[in-house]
Length: 295
Picture (cartoon, rainbow, N blue to C red):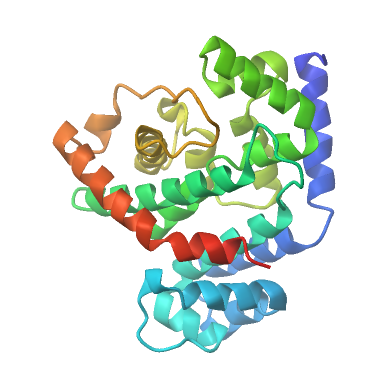
């Protein structure tokens, strides 16, 4: 097994190679930069998305899904942006791009992509619901929360695709010893999936307000900015695990921060209520999952 330092170097090389493959991540980086710019126009954002017609087509199908409840058919990227807004479009485009970038494996591994994406979408929806709750007390963008929740475990995809044997070993270690996966990753690989997420998303030019919640979601107390958003993603992950929407069978749920209830102004009754809302949202979002995994 590689020593931690050499493994970190290896993973840095993997991530470097990854973004030199098809330019989809660059398109997303350009899209996120454009959306962040307050002077951006709808045609400018549409032009970036339309540079990849396969993603643009899938984005239109997502925008027309029952989940968003638009009464009339959306026939153009321009119209989709106008009706759904920049941040929703960013989340949808990001979903379509990442699914395409990390295709399903032909042989069923210990780590199953289908379960991964169900958990990711569930976490995005949970984060969105939590953001709407906390907005009563603090300004938090619910679509930013969805995006951070969706991407919170992206490092697992990198590990599974490029360090398949070592990652499977970490999963089996976690399950057999009943330790948290990120602890088993540290022991077997030398880094955990949040560190890999950080390397990848920095190369994708993710803004810090999204990067920090993603990379600190297992240790929200380490967040120096976007503190509420980090705790939102942390709690969203906890709620999904509590509902049994896990990435692996027999997965050990991550630990809950002792401050999360206070930071997010939550009570046990409120968490149960939000869990019910999430169950309903997951049912409504089934068509999103099917579209993302269609060709």
